[in-house]
Image 1 (cartoon, rainbow, N blue to C red):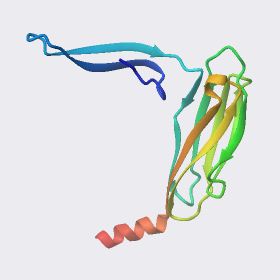
Image 2 (image 1 turned 90 degrees about the horizontal axis):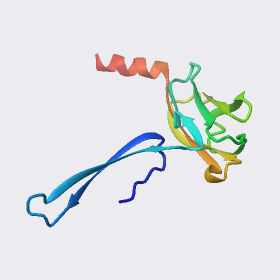
Image 3 (image 1 turned 45 degrees about the horizontal axis):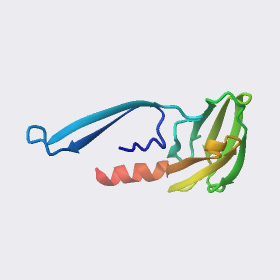
Length: 149
């Protein structure tokens, strides 16, 4: 049995059914528990920017190094420069970073993109953080609710 641990971290539990030729136990359920140790923790895995265009909409993603080696981050590409701005703040040199995402869009729209960061860790050389926006216009929401009454 293979267990795909990509995208997971910490305690995991997987279950499987094993079909046998034993008439008394045709199906046996097995469980595997383990601990996935990742070199870099990202929390949350994506930045969801939802709210009104005239409000400040900001989300923070935290990146932590779990290896003894110092972590370096370098921006590679960002797919939403016209809709979102971001900045990387070092919390603890080589160990912990915060990435602040702020909505720039003034239109009622939904968007979906990513920020790619290059790291110096060979097992996790690229980090991709999804950025999702659902921006509303306050007057549009009021008009929609007025039409329903």
